[in-house]
Length: 257
Image (cartoon, rainbow, N blue to C red; front, side, top):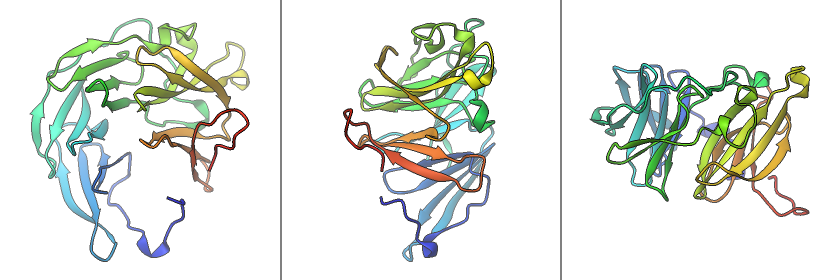
């Protein structure tokens, strides 16, 4: 919790870690393309791989719900598909595909420029509503699916509350404390140097409750914890990469850890 790394408790993973998800048992799920590996700590505290599965589909995102079930997101053309996987990577259930992509409006800048090709897909479990929240990088718009496989189209953030949708880049968003926390870049029509990136708190209807400007030095929002902590990755393209844990506080209080 203090962010320090024990040199004797570091383990290598066998594939590029494009997707990392940890469950309540401290099991680490690593996905890359069609490969899904699961790691755990052994009795000596070493990270070891105990599951290596080869799926028939590309794993685009993954989430572990509070009941310990693993779900992964893939795509059928331009429609999202959610699968429930077993502990060893087998498909337990495939839900019907979601809605097809909409033509307009859509986000033409799905990646923040200063971070390059960081995956922009949203796949989260909203515990309060008992629904999955899905977005395929701005091409489909926001959708949600309940645990019975019923889909519905949500409001497109790029077209409600953010002005011109073609100039908005939704860098990332996470379900957070019954609402959503998002990092959004407003792109200038003049030059990228005039772009503005904000951290925004949204309600369940995707309306902005709170907003604050952040900079590249603050980092990219990469995670949100149940205790209210927010995690930012700094120095993404350089060697001096840092993970910062922050909490929102009233004005005048010290928030970053």
